[in-house]
Amino acid sequence: MNKYLLRIVLVIIGGTVPALAQTYGTDNHQVTVQVSTITMVSVDISSISMTITGAGVPAGQDQMTATNTSSKLRWGVNSSSRKITAQTNLATPLFALNLLAVSPTQGTAAAEATLSTTAQDIMLNIGRSLGECTLQYTGIALASQGTGTDSHTITFTVTTQ
Amino acid sequence: MKTLCVMVFIAVVLFFQKATAQQIEVRGGNPVLSITTAVIGSEPTVVVNTTSTLRYRRQNRVTKITVQTSRPSQSFTLKALAQSVPLGTAAPEVTLTNGMPATDFVVNIPAGSNIRRTCTLRYTASATFAQGNSAEMGNDVHTVTYTLVRQ
Image 1 (cartoon, each protein chain N blue to C red):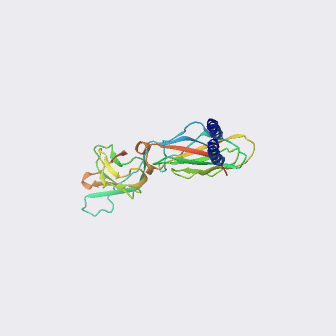
Image 2 (cartoon, rainbow over the protein chains, first blue to last red):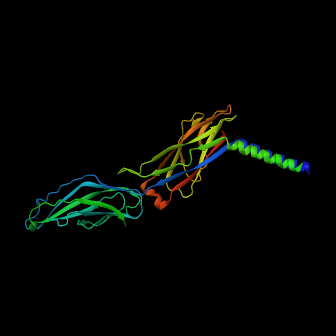
């Protein structure tokens, strides 16, 4: 009986030692990666100017326009279900100012909007993306509106869709 | 005799367990890497942490240290690199992914007298906007395991 037990012990030890000889030691710790909610939106040109001259408009046509596509809107959003809206601070503009997002690299452009003091959708479905689009502004004046200047401060906001 | 055999067996097992546990040791606690910022036009800014160290003992054979991680449902990217390695050679930076096989971390640790040396653990965390954030995805909590083995 004793020889039998001793044999078992030796077999176990004999199997343990070579295994341990290949692995000398091990240790671990926990490493945590946490990512904050990051929401960024930026316009690359701080100021643009558009002049409606009426040049090229056929005689008898009331509506005149000017278009500008020199600025881009860039964003970085790591939350899901987000959109970008735009609004102006000018409550009573003399002339209409339309905005359309063109060639977005991510998401979907909303329909062209006439800017007002109420936020309107410009870009949809931009959740969890890094992207940009061209901002196409169109100023619209009627000959019957006469002359004048509108100065807008336009604010872009990333919000829940 | 039976009792004696059992006692000898327990003593041997405890001896090897103790000896094994002392051969390699992670120090510096459990680091937390927080990604909080980005620059417009770029992915979120990567974060580096070097607060932890790895202390290991030279053996009478050439050895190496491997690394692996366990993190089911991993969302973000975590890399590890051995820095300031006094004994052996740092392997290239390892991208830690759940279920990965043990991957070389420090190699060619020469055989020799039983001395201890310490290297720095450099962790680099990164995330893309497309990978989301912790509020929606949860934190990635890795259990990173280092093993000293015969090379």
